[in-house]
Amino acid sequence: MTVDSKSNPLGPGYEGVPGNKIRYRDAFNSTLRYEMQRDTDVFLMGEDISGGFDKETKEPLDAWGGPFAATKGLVQDFGPERVRDAPISEAGFVGAAVGAALTGLRPVVDVMYFDFVTVAYDQLLSNAAKSRYMFGGQTKVPLTLFARSGAGTGHAAQHSESFYSMLAHIPGLKVVVPSDPYSCKGLLAASIRDDDPVFVVNDKKLINLEGFVPDESFTIDIGKGRYLSRGSDVSLIGMSYTSVVCQEAAKRLSEEGISAEVVDMLSLSPFDEEIILETVMKTNRAVIVDEDTPRASMASEFAAIIADRAFDYLDAPVKRVTSPHTPVPYNRDLEMSFMPGVDDVIATVKSLV
Image (tube, rainbow, N blue to C red; front, side, top):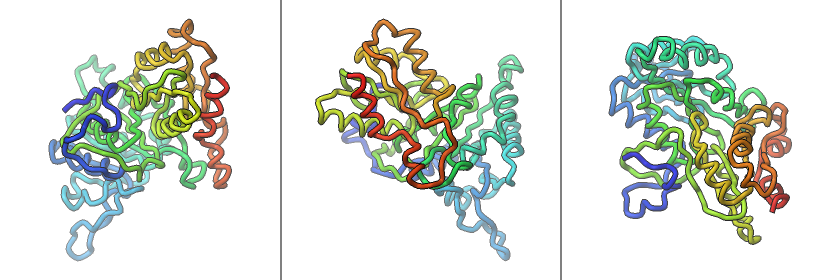
């Protein structure tokens, strides 16, 4: 089924539909498995995703499955031809995946940590995103990439970035940001079936988050946001893990008599301008929560859309709650302070209402 992501939030409305409460990482792994069974052109490529081989039998061993076990166990079912370990050369294997996509295969590439995107940026910018345009629409690039983003897990400055705005800036590359197991399954399936390159950003803090996921296959439309809760006093606009932050902030604000509406963007390129305008025109106040640093961020882009198309509806300035313009600290206390948190959102809302 195709799900209208604007009207279907985290699972309410699915009473009676077969499904289970599972972790984000398990939703990701099971969706990869299903899509590989569904289409033999789908294959995986990345660092440390298939493990090694038994020296005597030459059979695949139980794989580590990369960070957070996203691909664990798949090499046993599909073999090393479809679950390919790559050398530590992101530019090399992303370039190889672009070539495979151009020839009709559907590669799914594990870039491991989001920070490593920079090593492969030229392949994304110059080849993956531009090939269809440069060939006059005569070719497709059905390529899916994924990586782990975000601070809060002690991975330090070189393994904790959230600069997904850098990817959203590339015309021809789609960027999706699931925020729970349900959206993980629907957006990953949609990405793999898409004929354009799509980058799936997985925040590390979501990996063990549990939520209801229907058993049946479904996709969520890329480019559509959704409401997680309805309210009338202020709009909280989140993406990826910050949508979880917005939900918790809305619950606490409601205890103080402040009604917050929560919007989960789900996609950053393309993104749902209409849901942003719709909620702001209703509540007349907006707080945008983004773990990226503030300059040239998605928070800044959303704020610009509101200022350009909904300025007359505003009763207060648009506010952004972001990480500071610094690298991610390694010290645990500093790292926790670095990320936009529930208390930051609540304080910002109270400055507006």
